[in-house]
Length: 304
Image (cartoon, rainbow, N blue to C red; front, side, top):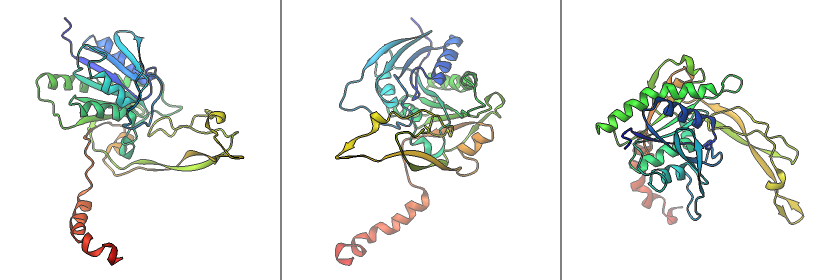
């Protein structure tokens, strides 16, 4: 009987993603854990917490050295859900790790992130979980940086498993970890909170001949020259084709100082406890506490 702690790995870049493969390789190489993998069959970046509801999932066992692994036709949240259900693996994992994502997940982009959703789904089901993202930069980063990122996370992973075993690990949150671009020279761990950074997006009308950029992750601003298959995207409507629009980056809102994004840019490995509740800020709550009681009297149909 194998008494080692069990870790299940998922992601949103797909089961062949370099970040997931590096993380699994590092975990397996320690020989400290049983490693399960349950990840999307292809990239599902920016799928947020979407789930498959009315259609069956297709699951296929795949080979990843040292691990028991399955690819799934669904979303990251689907993968986390079925992976911890005992439908595929003989035991419920002790810890779920979602990542390593190609691109950081900070600020408002946490809402869009399939990587964070994989960890959040495990959290919904009462399991300790972490999401891990690497701040990939085109022209600077290499695949080896995923391995360095995984190794940099090992102390946190080991510490969490010790807390789980002693039943002292908190159950009201999960952790979102982001690693800086120059991960080999990081400044250490820094406890942060989710900020308000966001990549501002606009819409650009495109033609069938257009070369379009693709957002590689929720916080990566490196373009890809992948060409759209216009035959797959055009829809006829009478004698005219529908108009085609593509997202484009128009700017970056960096958010507050000393939150996740700013600390990541300073070279820290940011560790941000997250939950699933989305309370408004205190000043908003105070405003609506005064506002709501007078709504019926002041803003009824007859008062307009």
